[in-house]
Amino acid sequence: MRKAAFFIDGFNLYHSLDTRKDFRKYKWLDLWRFSKLILLPNEELADVYYFTAYTDWNPDRKKRHQVYVLMNESVGCKVVLGKFLKKDRTSMVKCNKPCRSGREEFCKKKFTSHEEKMTDVNIAVNIVKAAAMQTYESIYLLSGDNDLRPALETAREISPSLRIRVVLPINAQAKTLMDFCKEHSFKYIRIKQKALSDARFSDPFTVGDTPYSKPAHWN
Image (cartoon, rainbow, N blue to C red; front, side, top):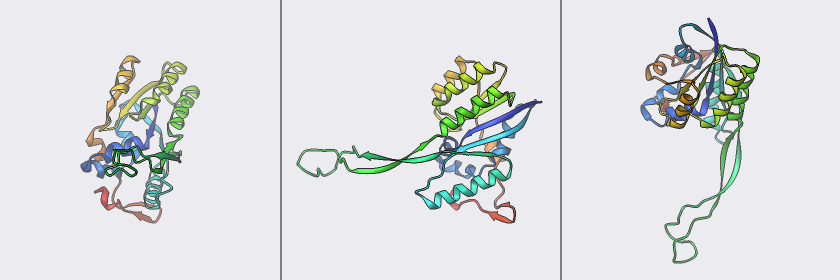
């Protein structure tokens, strides 16, 4: 049996499910069980890495996320946290009612947004590290992010015998990534809805003596 590991881009997966209301129920996902469903028959799951970051400015969302992380850690997943950084921006939306004159102008109001940092780098570093150390014989990358292509190329250069497969989120528009896989002989698959349905946590799901229920708006 070939030792396999999954590298999961958490926000890429989350947003692909959140874009369709009928898929939000699958956000209650047991990542370890889900990964096992994707493996080939001659592979055994050794590790699942879940890359994500907490929304510190939104306490309710952060709390739900922390519960989800706790649940997946309890079934064996390894969580690698990035972070969000504040970024000052200027609104370039055209004003409905010009603020200073009778001609149409841009709003130019200042506001603060948040950008996820480190996640792509964390994924890339861990994939290349696994290839260099020959920790696994098969690697699965769950993401539709084109920025991870150099990591896959480097992993193949370091370990030509390493089996690499890209798992595309169910709603991801990833033509560039699919073309890249074809050009470099990487296999890719798109997530099937049945795998999502079969890999959901029970509701409630208990960790230790504490039960956790799926958020109502995920139904």
